[in-house]
Image (cartoon, rainbow, N blue to C red; front, side):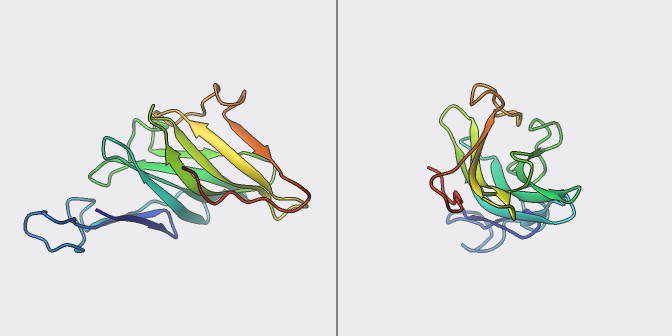
Length: 166
């Protein structure tokens, strides 16, 4: 199984070896109706990272333009490609990390089910910083991580962008 994310917070599910009636690499039509799903969130959206939870749910991280500013965006899909309403009530969580543009580029699922998202904050401003947020498995900010579930920090005088998590 392979999942990819792209412009418009898109997830695509490909059939793995052993699937009945389809060749490896074919779109899996049990995911959505045609093997792919796109979720509109804001004016402009982009998916940049994908993680698969132990229960098979698919979590996509990226960013969405909300009221003129970009925010981290996290979307969770069921194994059938539908938005998971047990995640942030509608399957979509947006996170305003800083007063500037926030762009998520990385995601990791912890063994306890917590979702960690990272990227850049304050993009387009005087200094871009690392940004990290942690969500509970139900899609709300985890106040046990920092005091509000999100942090931004820099290293040195230049711009800082987090592009991977493990």
